[in-house]
Length: 446
Image 1: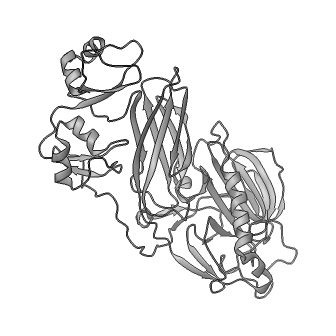
Image 2 (image 1 turned 180 degrees about the vertical axis):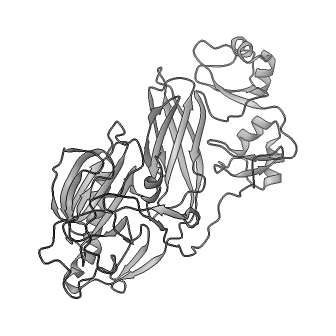
């Protein structure tokens, strides 16, 4: 229910061709759009603040237990890559102690943020270190200020120097806090407990510059860019995202082609978006066929899965048009009594035919196409896997390959595709999934 607590948020829109008749024909009404729009021209883009559409309650699923407040001497939150076994290694408690107290199996990978009760304040920590070509037990002992015998004992080694390059060993170290294999120093996944429509950020810090750094979030690719001392990837959760725990993996290849992998489970919460019943006229029934919608979704998925650098935006995104928002992201819609059901992948904005539709942020036009459902559409690539789409246009004023700045006119609004009245359908996709546009209007992301 995180979105209910967001309060007032900024909203988005799009545009199309000037009407030759002025007002809408009698009875012309888009169930996604609401009452007919006013005819007052709005040449200046401004941010409209409205209350976010409330959500209905969604069934709760079993997630990792939460601990209130910060960690204490008796509570430990699991981080990326941690299992009960690795926490036992770090804290000095036995695996049996921790498993019994928390009623979990020692071999189970823990969910990021999962709270574990400790039997007592933390004892000696253990740092995991990958052995390099030049390392020996003596050199490692000197590097970490421990006795060679302590290293051998911590790793149950049969001899005083039985280590090989690439091996991960345990180094007793009072201040060690990471269970990650070298050269990973830290991996942060945020926000904790996101839900459908949110954007997840994976931030990685390493001790060496990676030759290759890639990852997966719930089976979808993570692409990283360098930001100061970190490597950062962003990925969106689609409106259909199911609550539960999903796998997160990060793979690093170093200059010697040694691959290190860190992984964990990450909790995703229920969305709680509203449901809606929508009725379209008989002339649009063919566009409710599941095959038509599935083929269009596949086409868009291939477009939104693209990648380009650099990041072209430097601040919050802006409204393509500043009329009233009449359809919200994420609602689960049932059309004409059940002929078709699906999630709303964007937001709808009232707009007279011919209203200019402006770019929400700097980017490059990558698609100008007439889709069956979305009608005449313009898609802009903003870099780093972020795209915006402007749909139901009557006329397009740009071509594929054009570079556009914030506020540049892309098209004129209309009612092409599955629409019963002129309006703008605006989508924002991140990492291959359509997401909630509102946060991108309120602040610079990621």
